[in-house]
Image (cartoon, rainbow, N blue to C red; front, side):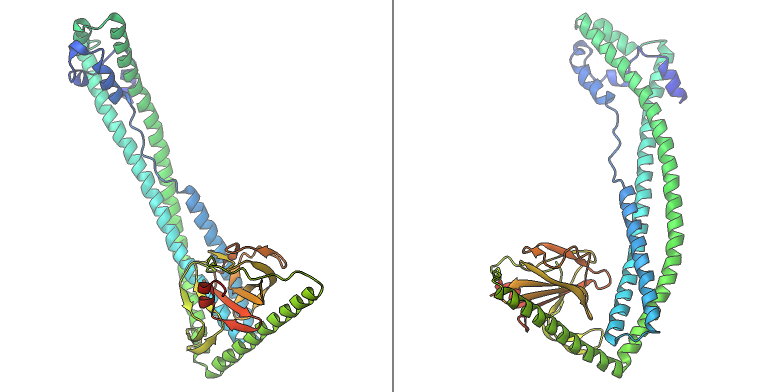
Length: 411
């Protein structure tokens, strides 16, 4: 700052260590380029602003934590109520997956906070580097002014021996004055930026340290809850009678879906009898996979990872990121929105031509019964607890292989 005050007293000046790089006899042309290079302030490198991302991640953590606590209360209440074995398995497995996601999000948020602090530190280092470089220039300028008592020898010689006209000389000296002023102004601006960035860095580090302490407490709490849930799940899996009960419930659920489809088909036939125009299945090659992801459970006889036995799948399960968009495989009308036992909230679409498509393990459903949806239109999102979407196709009450049906375009 002393250099800045010293420089502010001298405006009619130049910088001898730069002036000597060009031919003095042609100074009206070349100095403009030289001064333009040195007069341009060093711009701060644009850095990613993490504030919005940190706020978003913290809100997600709060939402997940609220859902976890609500789920744990439900699990605790199941001990006092008669809940189906399959329902308990669904809730326990979902709670475990939700806990894992919450713990992973804690790590991700800490990484973002750490990256934010690192970025602020880089910005502060850049400001300090600019200050050092500017101070070096200003020190040389002040030294020159001290020695010569005014404009240095190089500038005076350039002024006296140059071949340019008077206006060019005046323009040249104005550029020198503006450059000196830019050094003074830039120094003041960077000093203020340094104070601001240093304070911001301190706040960021305090926030990071506080979050690390919070994360340690949360990890201990919810990891302990997760271990308890895993023990409960293992207890059910090892109980042969519980396993048989779950398999029986799966058969009952399949029959329940069949009964629902039968009722929907009956309603459709009644509407046709009242001269309502029949909808026709949209066939073609543009059908959508309900969610982008790997098919983790195929149609037919498959190994059930939770029950540790072979079961008959009437649909497929597709892994999806929690919150990912779930789309309609083909156009249709929303026939029913309901909880499907063993698969959470779901949508049944009447696609026409006696075809019904079933989507389950959904969240964020924004449709209502009777709504028309187009092929690939968004219907909801992947449930956080499930992390996968159940997809089933029926022609009347007969199930079809969804994978093959999608490939054939409904044929």
